[in-house]
Length: 460
Image (cartoon, rainbow, N blue to C red; front, side, top):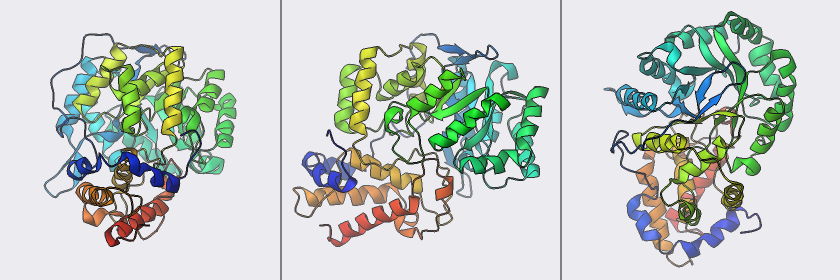
């Protein structure tokens, strides 16, 4: 597919490759799952090796190139049916990561609806404080007052059982433009407060994570002469390198290049785009596995990010032992991409960019929905079915009934009825929290409309 195609045109042409797969989708639930549902299942598949480390040029920190992102800790249900962090599994994952050299842990008061920092504090508090680097964020999205922001800062220390932060971030600046940055951090005196905390040593490195426009990013980097950012966290992967299609996002090659010019260390977030660079279309998966049959699809994305010399660490939100072991294998036997492999990944990114999926990274910033809708789950299901060709395009297409059943059955299995897209009233409360600038209600209504046309047999 050399030319860009719209979602409508894509749905018109996907049927040909779907015939042989439709029956399998109906029974598999459309979504392929790696391994089983037990986060700790499997043997120790990590082969002997030495974790790759990078030196922070600002202070000499020796940081593992694989960082543990705490946004996707495994969850369980409490006695009242509420979703809570499964602390026992988190402890086991952290123990394994420590054993194999992972020493950078990234969290936020906003992750997992406020549960991530406490879970990280419990797991990490069992180790000497100087044996790991702790990163968290001032996630003052809702309340910008000086008092509330300082309280969030101090609460983070309490939750994380620490009296200093190794890496502290202004969280997701750029989402509300430069004006939003000034309101959240400058006009209320909070940035001055954080600079004083850095002077006092309670913040060892001060930086920011970015989601926004090119103009906003340029403005923030101009402030480097004033604030001397110690690091910057950006979304970087081989697809976003040249294909960051969302209007508010910026290609990663530009973001990285500007930081490289200023010799500002880079922290990488979303190296897998919330799993989208693992759950790739089958033809693309075959290309990747064909080159490295013994390596995982994910390893290609991690090698891409880790091959950039100014990257300090690459964050991964590892929820299972299988994922943790695979990533440790990648970074304990790290092999930078060759020029030929870089070209191969560029061609792969060009192919992936033609699939009109919804660019959701499963960050869950949009959650909880006030009406109980499972927004990331609905988008994840749709994207997987698009990538695998399980989309019915017209009643006249061959195998239409099988594809129709596949989508409807898998949708009901994946998303509880009270959490499906038809419950969206378009309140738009989710939009301002989405770092990818997705018009969430519009996408939910499109999916719901597609489902209704399947049910009524009115798909043209």
